[in-house]
Image (cartoon, rainbow, N blue to C red; front, side, top):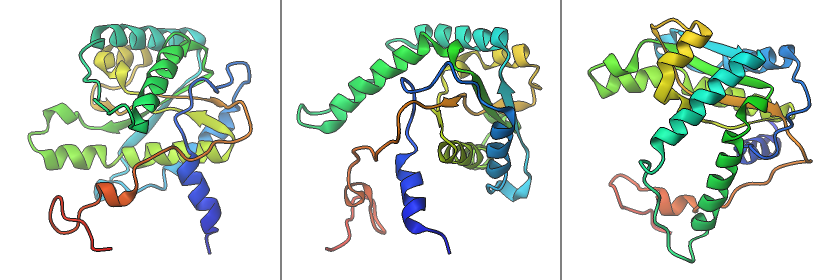
Amino acid sequence: MIDRAAADKLLTTTRSVRKRLDFDRSVPPALIEECIDIALQSPTGSNRQNWAFVVVTDPEKRLGIANLYRRAGEALAGQIPVPEYGDDDPRKSAHVRVYDSAQWLTERLEQVPVFVIPCVEGRVETFPSVVAQASTYGSILPAAWSFMLAARARGLGSVWTTIHLLYEKEAAELLAIPASFTQAALLPVAFYKGDDFKPASRLPAREVTYWDTWGAKRDA
């Protein structure tokens, strides 16, 4: 029987780690492969298992990806809508903190010892239907999240990033990723500093859950 308390802690404390990533501590390759082994137990569409994980540890290649990431950030500056929160909404201050930590990591990204890029076979932008797109991403995103959970359980921190995908083709050329594969994310991975993480402030499920009809809440 699964230890529910331990499982709940893992699920609620796997945070986006940026400023607490330890740039000075190397990560054993076997530990990354162990996390990927666990990730490969995730479900995939039609059980195709059409996934691949590119692990980047070479300093020059990490720098190349980091430069693409920074270029993409500059190109997207001002184009991503900023959520409008009320002054008393806790998400407002959280957004400011996230932006600050994201900028901090952007400036130092190549110092992270390991990048993991989950990929899936197929070019999502060529699929004509939402069904095909959802099925393709649904074949890799659960595995990528499982990787992050496995990493957290082993003292590793990570953060889900996608900005580099603005220059996905250039990243593929740098890493020799086949053109037939779609990169789903970029996960910077390192041991984390400090002892633990705590659950984030989130809206209660009741405020974002509708029953049978959009907007319909369950009776208390």
